[in-house]
Amino acid sequence: MPELPEVEVSRLGITPWLVNETITRVIVRDSRLRWPVPLELSQAEGLPIKAVVRRAKYLLIDIGIANIVLHLGMSGKLRIVDAATPTVKHDHIDIVLGSGKCLRYNDPRRFGACLWQPLGTTLKQLTNLGPEPLTDEFDGERLHMLSRGRKTPVKSFIMDNDTVVGVGNIYANEALFMAGIHPKRSAGNISRERYKHLALDIKAVLTKAIEQGGTTLKDFAQTDGNPGYFKQHLRVYGRTGLPCERCETPIKSMVIGQRNTFFCSVCQR
Image (cartoon, rainbow, N blue to C red; front, side, top):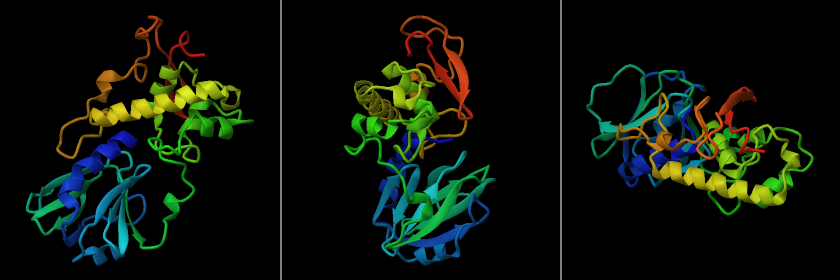
């Protein structure tokens, strides 16, 4: 599933093509996504795009009267193409622009979403979300405060959108390794000082992933079709049995919260 860095890279890729362009047509070829594509989407025709922002893993295209809200789900991809470019299988939605380009949404598994958020309202999917991890609202003090009395594994704790948004499985594994914290350790048994380091490591790993263009595993590619390169820098994720880069102990794996988890049994306590 594309994680926050991949979604942010997509936002950075499409923004220069979309902002200040007018939507001339919206084509929905298949409305059967995670939630049905709303009929209100046609109201976007004739309206200019003011901005493209990200909230958690959602992209919000601001057209004044509403936001068109996109989520890539497990296999969604966004491309900027000429509007006349022939479609391929799973090209479900086109947002056609006055420039002759279009934003094309392709999603083989159809677990993504295209939603309509009228001005002054908030979709239920965007309510009760924690802070963005790359802002000052998120820090070690917040982690320490929210974790008190919590017996849940720390990996599950930092992946909870109520705690902080967008720390998906890959980056939770990597940040915990950087911080030297065992992923199964109870969230409530970690000190304030260690949480300060963990918060900084979360920010660092996400920032580096964005700079590298996102992590390509199976489905993600940038809006220009090129893959992300962060996979070359993964220290524990997907490296079961390979030597830890710090101590050369073989990396281990387990399942926590139904997600594959990777760690060094020596470096992480």
